[in-house]
Length: 210
Image (spheres, rainbow, N blue to C red):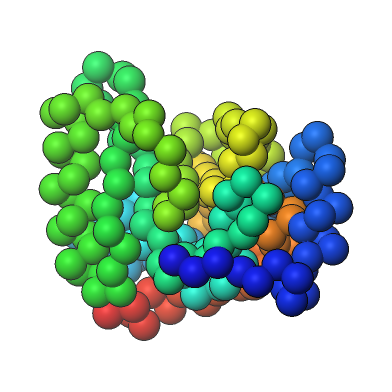
C-alpha cells in the first residue's frame, strides 16, 4: 500500500468535490454476454460463479482506480486487492469468505472451493474493517436491472461492490446482469466502462485466462 500525494494528484479537485456530497457513490448495471464462458465452465466442470469471482478480481486489479481507497481525508493505493464474497449455506443464510487474488486461475479455483467450504462450516461473518478487498455477491434468482448495496457513510466506505445475477437468453445469446458500484471521488464512468469492456473480453475468450 502507498499513499497518494494529494496536492499533486490529478483527481484531487474531483475527490474534494465528492467528499462534500451526501451520496458520493454511483452504480452502473448492464448485461454482459456469457455464452462462451458458460460453455467453457461446462466443458471444464468449473463453477461459473468462481469464474466470475476470478474475472471481476482480475479486471479490478488491472484498473488503477479500483485500487484506490479513502482513509480519513487521504487516499491510498493498494498493490492488489482480494475478493471478499458471500456464500450461501444449507441454513439459507449467507456467510463471508475472502480469498487471496492470484493470477493462476486453476489455483484460484481451488482456493475458492476450500475457503468457501470453511466459511460455511464456521458460519463466518466478517465485522473487521478491511479495505484491501473488493466486495462481490451473486443473485442467481433475478435478472435484475439495477441494485444498491449496504455501506457505511461515516466513515466513508470506498470499497467497490460487484453484483451479478440470473442468466437469461436474448437473440440466441446467453446474457447476465452485472453491476459495479464505486466512489465517484476515486473513479468515473470511464473506469467502470473499462472494467465492463475487460470483463466482456474475458467472458468472450475464457480460454485466454489459462
